Structure formats: structure tokens, C-alpha cells
Image (tube, rainbow, N blue to C red; front, side, top):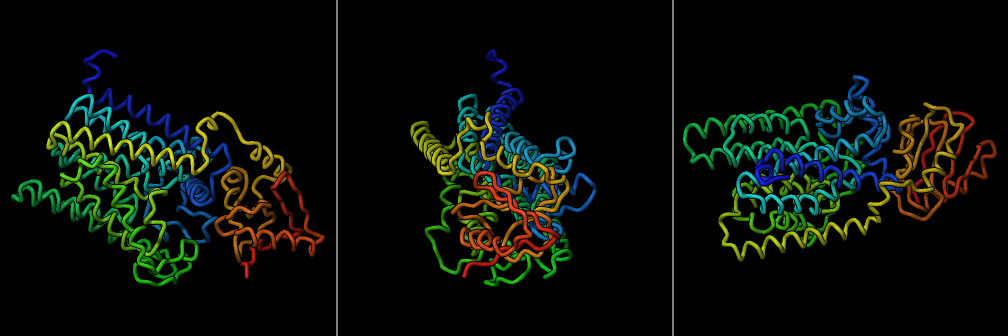
Length: 470
């Protein structure tokens, strides 16, 4: 690649995006091939994609009887339905998510090149590949918030380049990704007015963005309330101290301790993602709504940096770093940027190691997946199967899968579980052990084993719910 090409943001951004795509695909497929994918959330979004592809509202029987629009307002996930029509397999969602993350990296690298030059673009590329936010989101199966990454990147670019029409486009699409992003768009409107010098034109443009955010938020709450049996989003329980609602039973229990050391984690990781220098940019106000609801929530998983919740913050943090870059003298900037990159890389490598994911596994398949195929041979396609969290995604292309969990009411013909002592969402070791022990009391239940995997066939469709441990 010659020097003129290195100065073209579109070319460099595309190359950076391609590299990022390969990296994110390798990580995601490695986790899949190691048998680490789970029904929460890959199975849920795979079944939603199935329904979208058939022209139906998104529904996941793993989650329950309700449409997913009763859980989150995310019509943007219809893009998963398009991908599913191309390849009806959960892995297509992993590829789709990797593509969206990579496009976000491409936009921010191109922006850095256009404004600051090749070195800054290289730093942003490294920040994208080594970012704990991006790696954790990529390895957390699939989630709708990944769709917001390129849209937030476009919004940040529009702020930096004063491109109002592109800001409108980004905001219109952002409110379709998840209900809380209406708050982000509202803050974007206020910030647009402030950065425009608070003149009349800036006021008009800022009001447009604020209206988009407000309408998007109201629409989201109305739709969720319409489909949710409780009449409102069950996630409000995490802010009101309640724990009611049928859907809330499928999520983390609220934590009532203050736990400041855990609540401040999102703030710390945001500072790291800005490469520290971004603290001098007003663009960081775009992160305020996401940081606020995460810190104030009683859901401990929102405080963690190990999930997907930091994804939407990464383009904001990088945009802030790009804007603040010229405001620092060379020596302190180099030291702070280097520190930010090192901390990000250490956090990401540590996270990958902690999750036990070997990138080389992207090119080979674990033997336990072959054992699962062997176990399910002979089970008719389309059969109703209750599957443990760590098994469900691998069965979805062939079977009608629901969750094997405590007191699940769905009537199924088969149940699949793992006979081990690993903790599993909705199927703890003691619950599975009690279930397996009870098999002796049902001689008419047919049981097959393949390694640690157990398949139970019922003589007639019936609930396969586990019983809670005492």
C-alpha cells in the first residue's frame, strides 16, 4: 500500500474494519467451537431471528411465551432475521455481530486518520482490537446493543464534523436498537445545541434530536407496556426496588447493597477506553445516560465490564479521545495513551483467558459437540426439546428448543442436560443431580448418554422443569 492510500480515510478505515472483523469472528467462532455458547443470549436471539425471517414478531421460547418486544424495544434486531434467511444457523448471528462491531472500528479509524493522521489511526485500531468493551461484547454470545456500535460511531463522527443530517440518521436508527438509547439521543440534542454556540440554528437542530429521543423513548415504553403482562418494562424493578413481573424472573435478582466498588467499574472502564486523554472532550456527555442507569441499577451485571454493556460507550470514548488529542502536549499524551492501551490490552487478554477461550479453536471443533450430534441422532427434526443453557444454541437449527430450568411449564418430548457439577443459569448442579436421580422412578422414560450429556425421551409430551434445590 503506497503512501497516498495511507492518507485516504475510506481505504484505511475499510482495511481496519476488515482486520477487526477477522479478529472478532475468530474469537466468536472459537467460543462456539469450544461449546461455550449459551441459550442466554445466543439461543434467544437465534429464535428471534427465526421468527423475524418468517415475518413474525420476535419470540424466543427459551425466554417464554411473550414476544421479545415485551422485554426490550429492539425492532432493529430484524437485521438478524435477514441474516437468518441467508444461513439459518446461530453462527450467522455471530458473524453479523462481528460485522457491526468491525464497521464501528472502521468508522472511528477513518475519523482518526482524517483528523489526526496515520499514527492516531493506528492507535484507534489497536484500541478497537484490544478494547475490553469490544472483546467482552464479542464473547458474550450476541446482543442487540452491538447494532448500536456503528450507529453511535456515525453519531460521534457527525458531531466532530458538524454533519447534522448524519446525526439525524444515526439518532433515528439508534432509538430502534434499545429503549434506553432514546435518553442518549436526547442528550445528543442538548449537546448539539451547546456545541453549536447556543445560537438559533443550533437550538433548532438540537431540538430535532431531542424530539427524536423523546418520541423514541415514549414509543419504546408504550410498545413494551403493550406486550408485557405487567403493563410496563420489568427492568424498572431494578430502579424501584421491586422484583415483580413474569419477565423479571428470567433475569438477575436485584442487589440491595451499595457496593460502590462495583458500581464505579463502568466509570473506570470508560476512562480507560478514552485512553485517558478523552476526559477533555464534551463528547463524553453522550455516555452519561448509559453510565447513569448502569450505576443506579440494582442489577449487579450492569456494573460489570464482562458483558456487552460497554459496547455503546466505545465509539463515544474513542471520539472523545480523537477530539481531545490536539489539546494535549506530546509527552503527556504519549504516556497517557500508552497507559490506556496497556490497561485495555491486559484487561482483554485476562478476560479471554478467564473465559477459557483459545482463538485457535476457531479452526477446530470440540469433541463434546460431536458427542451432542451423536446423542441427538435419531431425534426427529422439529421435536420439542428442553435443553440446558449450555446446550440449547447447538440444537436450535434442528429442533423446537425451550429452556431446561426450574418449574418450566412447557410440554416437551425430550430433555437434554449435562451430568457435571458446573454452575448453569436456571439449572444448578444440585437441581440437575436431583433430576437425574429421579429418572429411576420413571422406567418408561428412555435415557441415552454420550459422555457427560444425557438425553431423556418422554413417552408423552410433558413439562421437563427442574425442581429448585432446598
